[in-house]
Length: 296
Image 1: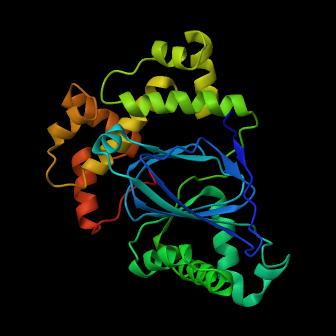
Image 2: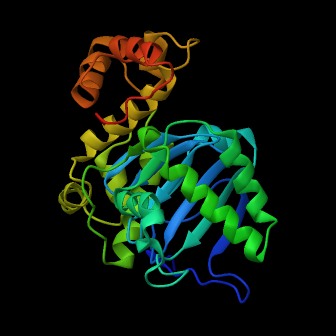
């Protein structure tokens, strides 16, 4: 059985945990930890569901999640079909892994602030080769060398506040039941696998092993969106990624995301993002690569 809670224990010679994942696609369920989770996506792309938000993720991105923040990386079907191997490096550590009062020291104030901000989930919006090298080096490191690398990573991130995006606006509630997590995960996987087609609440209810009326009430309660709103949310999130790529026309993006009508696509995109697809593309271009996630 999958568990919403995953305990991460340190090894005998380490006060924190470093894990490297190489998989055909990411398989972790919705879960949260009693530790901080610092992760780099070396190779993979898809959708990240964290707290009550969903966003695109891709190669080279770095995230920091605080204890108790539910999350799950879900690969798009397009990634699975490439046959490539998903690669991520994850560091788990507790706030007191170096002693109860370690991060209260004045010289560590910036890192302490960083850890507090991670309660809502943080994404680094800037590619940093130095950080990438540090993540890959820490996999091969042990003892003091690994510890210094972790502190250096945290120190560098703490000085990049302008480039750290807060994923949720408030601290999300923890889901208390394992069965609840399993059920919601299956439904969201179904949506992500079929959003380009016509996912419907009847099939989703079947995936969740519920009748349709009960499922619709359950889904709205858990995601704060109706089923159709959530499908639209996933489609628009996917569209924001395609809009940053010049090879895609607005019409092409409309049909690629599962919409049948450009006017309807424009209207739904603006409902979610606050701007039209064309305005989003122009803003992204003017911002030199900064993605507008805040309006999602």
